[in-house]
Each structure stands twice: as C-alpha cells, then as structure tokens.
Amino acid sequence: MDLYVMRPGAGLSHDIDPARPLSPVAREQVHKAANTLSRLGTTFEAMACAPSLRASQTAKIMAGALGFPERAIASGKALSGTGQVDEAMDFLAALTPARTMLCCAHAPLVEHLASTLIFGGPAGRIRFEPGALAMIEIPELPTRVAILRWLLPPAHLRLLASL
View 1 (cartoon, rainbow, N blue to C red):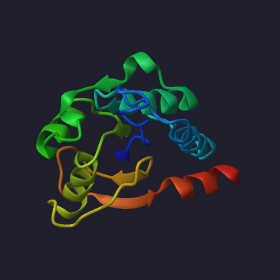
View 2 (view 1 turned 45 degrees about the vertical axis):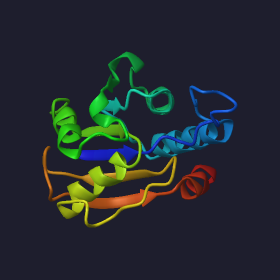
View 3 (view 1 turned 30 degrees about the vertical axis):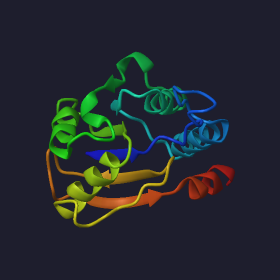
C-alpha cells in the first residue's frame, strides 16, 4: 500500500480566529500539493484525517482536486496531534484494503507515525513542516517495516506545481 501522510497547513492565529482554520497561504499550499499529485496521476482509495478543522479542510481540498468523495473521508481522534501511534495505525488499518491512502494528521503524531512505520519506533525522527507531504510504501498496517519514498516540504511542492 502507498500511504501518503500530510501535515495540515498552518492555521490562523488564535487572536484572529479561535477555530484556527487554514491560513490563506496554507490553503494555497494545500491546493498546490493537490494539483501536483493530480498531475502525477495519483488517486486515493481511502482518506482519513484528524477531527480538527485544519485537518478536515486539508483533506477536503485534496479530495476535491483528486476526485475523492468528501463524504468518504474518515475522521477520528486516533489521528489527533496527541494521538498514540498504535491507535492511529489501527484506525488506518480499518480502512484497508485500500492500495492508496491519504492520512492528514497533526504533529507530533504525524512525525511519530512516520518514524514508527519506517524505523520501528520514534527514535528515528522525521520532521514534517506544516503542509509537508510524504509517500510511504507499507506492506500492511500495522507495520514497522515501511519504506519512505519521499518527503516534500511545501516549498518543494510549490516548485513541482509550477513545472
């Protein structure tokens, strides 16, 4: 399975909007990431996101650009920033047998999840900037023997979208 893991873009400050939706810049970053994946012919058989507004907005933008039905996006507390890796893997495993899946989750969970999938635990740290996107090849969930195919920060996704 190809698991695409994305950290939602930055939110507005609490002073501007306590709900912290995606900032205009972050919204544009997510659109560019979605357009890049679309140009590469990427499709998803499953999508999941944390229950936050920003994660939901990120997943919906990706779904819209890639032809995935918004109503089919799974959302769960297991993908919240303070969630546990094993719970997150179990949540995602329940969505299989998808061959391609997008997971929008917050830090630190997104980083711990990627590290555990690839290195077998959180000792190998992987940093996800807000709006970063990774593609991880996994045999099945749960696992601790995945292969990181790529990890792109928003600046690189912007460059790819402009090609």
